[in-house]
Image 1 (cartoon, rainbow, N blue to C red):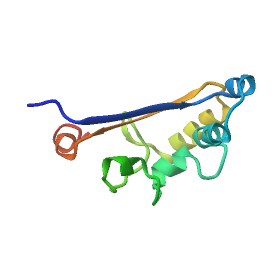
Image 2 (cartoon, rainbow, N blue to C red; image 1 turned 90 degrees about the horizontal axis):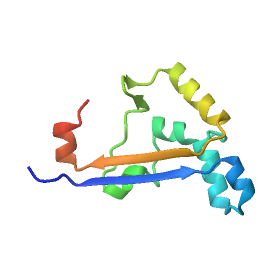
Image 3 (tube, rainbow, N blue to C red; image 1 turned 180 degrees about the horizontal axis):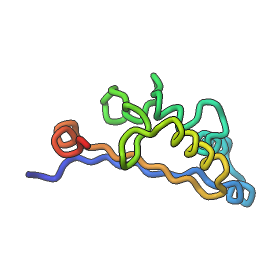
Image 4 (spheres, rainbow, N blue to C red; image 1 turned 90 degrees about the vertical axis):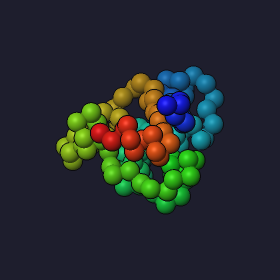
Length: 113
């Protein structure tokens, strides 16, 4: 079997200390609010419900949406989602985020659980 096509996108939302020490562009401040869940339309809402435009999956040409937020043991409960949002709102750390995507045939065969 050949090497599967894998797409990886990694980024971070800088913490408040970094934003205060360096002149930050408005897009980085908006990104921090999005990933730190300090606005109504935040990363948790986005991943859990999906959006119609600007979707992470759009770069791969696949419009199918995720089934929701999940962890090592499957879909997160409402309580786990509330706890995650609370943690993101109170962290002073940078918030790292990544998307890893495989070709549909590889993912369907090897990444089903």
